[in-house]
Length: 308
Image (cartoon, rainbow, N blue to C red; front, side, top):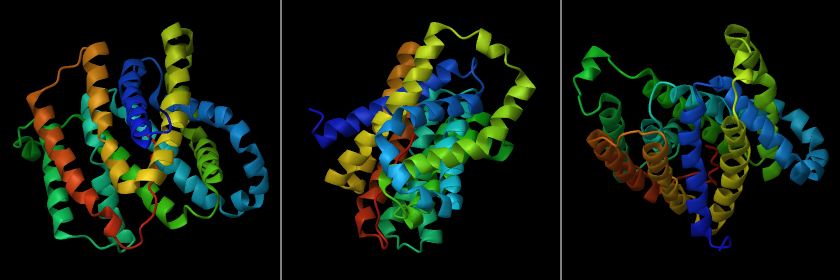
């Protein structure tokens, strides 16, 4: 069953959906930047045995291109996830995952400006529709909020998260072939862990470490989940499947994250699925389908890496 690329894509989305719901569940107990830092420290430890030989061979390459790995780590690995966990402190897992589904559109827009990729009329329409969907979710269908600037801070932080994710993808497209895949993955983690450590220290200096004493078994199991399933398994599953079905088809399956996050949020977090969620979600996903269906025809095509 795990040889079927579509099963792998569904499992990857399932684990990423769980990341949003569990992140919401523990967001009040573990500082968000610390939570992201712990998650990626775990991922580094778990994945190190599988990448050790390659890392030794690529040591010189890691040092030579350290600025690229730091950029990848700060934006896509640590930065994106820090913003996600900070976002769900103020908004719902459903909202965060819906806004996250706008990421492919952001990537295409940034690719157009920074990589000079062409864009079709169909993609322009898709981008416009997706933007309406995001605005619909953020304003809860009340567009007058655009003039009163009355927004949920968590929704806005999630928008920052997907911008960081877009920057990560642009850098990855341009520089992702400087080293083998495992080295790029681990190099990004190392770069992110080193250069975001001051933020984590500052965060805990301000809040104190009393939160550690209040952790339950459920918190520790959640931390274990974060470090293994949405980080290593989803990454490996998505990339393996993407090589078989292509980035365009694979990116569509990423929209299942919304479905799973909503299911988990409703069942375990008592979140409510609002009519504005349905309308906004449909608009975003329809827009993403329009923008990504032509993705393979863009100039400068490259494989897409995903890290939720």
